[in-house]
Image 1: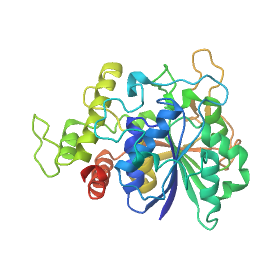
Image 2: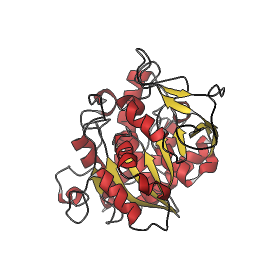
Image 3: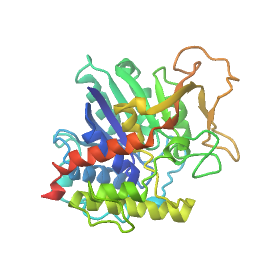
Length: 347
């Protein structure tokens, strides 16, 4: 069993990561913390709670609100891709102020913040190791490792979606999650714990094509030129999520075959790491470049002299290089099947 904590900024693809975190076999989700990023922190908090409800997550899994802005820089959001509230165009989720959603916020009525939530999850059972997964800017994670260095021996690894090897998506060379808070990303990369980076180079291969969308809507049906009617309310909701994200990626980036499910790959890695090929490198963040701020500098030619540690002087990161795409989507659709059986949206 893998115990995970998910830090996210939902976000359409974060919503798919939450689904996998709840329903992947042999994974126990301990909590979800939220951060500024795709939308403002209030929206990402309520979006995470809406998703936990929709996916029928265990009632002891709650949302813990985190940083509302980066460590140093002004906050930035991405309404062009995700809409104003972070889940633009999504139909079928309960409203943020509904009782079912509010019940997912905090633990036992307490206003517990992200850093404290992570610490409590670790201290609840020091005999187990947990994996901390990040699918947004890493502000909360940087604060946690700075405030609780004594708890790092209980962290098995940090797995994050972010960065790119020689490419960006919200600047010429910077990926959005890293660009939002590059200083936080560097702090996490310097921590002496194993890190796994899932970059754009890999996430851009995980495309929700029309054929996969067809299987999502109507399992077992034969793909055709026309998408079928969704067989459940959950599948309708997920389809509206995919459709909005697809249109955003088509108009902004020219993706014609469908949108990439970036963030879901982090959970897929924790669940089935053998579907990825990875190589260990030194990774640093460009913090001051006029044109390159937020770039993930991956030392693929080993120019920097490094030791064997995972920290500030070592090869600090496993960088994913490729993905078995069919295996990933089979896992994704299997999780949708599991979710279908318990989702209150289908009641």
